Image (cartoon, rainbow, N blue to C red; front, side, top):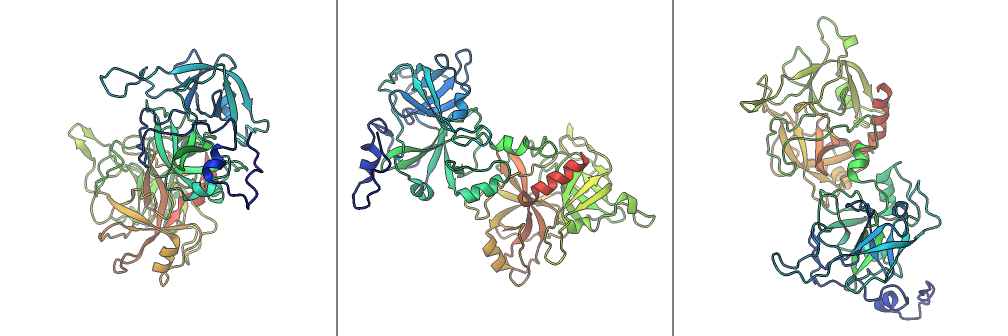
Length: 527
């Protein structure tokens, strides 16, 4: 068996193939080969492309509950958390699977199938790591032995016998390959490695990373449900073979992470009846049901924007909050500020998609309480964030619905993922304009506005994409939005803009994730 000390003598020249394939008598034998030669893998895996993938299921159920990989002729690698559901000599291990809806699989449609049928073996022995911790998922790794030897039609995956994290960091492509809930064939989801310190920052207090855990995120937006994906491999091409460098462990999947970890926000949020991939310049009816206008009743124009985040709370800037007239402060000559919800076209009472599909009249509320961040400063709009507690709750419908807030960071300010992001506002037109934006890295932003503004922690920047002149007057508090797993999230809030004559000057936004704990705690107090 491989001894990790064998390659520590720097004077001994051991080449990569020898290190990975010759230093173990059990692992990495005839492993990691694929009949496909191209470097980039399609999102839908092809037949024979992942012969090491396995599924675990209970005999009385059709759907699998976990995944794993073949690493030898008798062993399957998976997570320790998966083994808690595995029953020795009862749980089935499915090998040689591809399309879960047919058996056997055919290379060509309507052709005679020359592919062997899938194999189902029994899980005979479960060996979970002795130091596995269920609370932290530390040492979440396990081996399952099969009741019979695995035949030649299934090929094992290669495992790195020496660390190849440097290759992982600089790798152009890595993949998490798995069967998702929505797809019948394995998805090869392109991922990107995240350094531990950056990963912990994004996880915040949800999970404390332990030694032996690594992180990766989607390299580009993808709609896939990773439930039942525990045990699936993180793969990398290394010296013309496929190596498994990680196992999908913790079940903090995007939907659950953002919509189930809090009881006060992100309920029935971020949904609309249109495709979120392509949004026209001008918003359509029901397209932005979370947008809110703040207006003094004695004036015709709004003075600020906001977003609905629950049935009682509106999110806006602290500077906007300073101009709010609460119910208790209203006098004869100065009425309470109106919160206008369910608005679309400012010049019509109701808005129609068709003759038979029209919105209700707008809903108006006043404000009982303004919660301004305690550390807000007017000098550079530091901590420029506030919550408005309305005098009555609102009922969610097609015209009124809360926006989702990210509980951890979902957008990188380097814009490497080229996400489609929008700042949606009512400008000079009567219907909201959906302004396509681009993130601006922090250092670049500070350099571009060095004579105008000083960025503080909690600020992020974005600029208008393309040559578009927009009147941003009254748009403070508006949402910088991104499509994330089929829902609309507000990850930024417009705080400070600059005159149009300042060529391509970025706008300054409040980074919502930096304040999510304050938002959550403030909302929870009243609920």
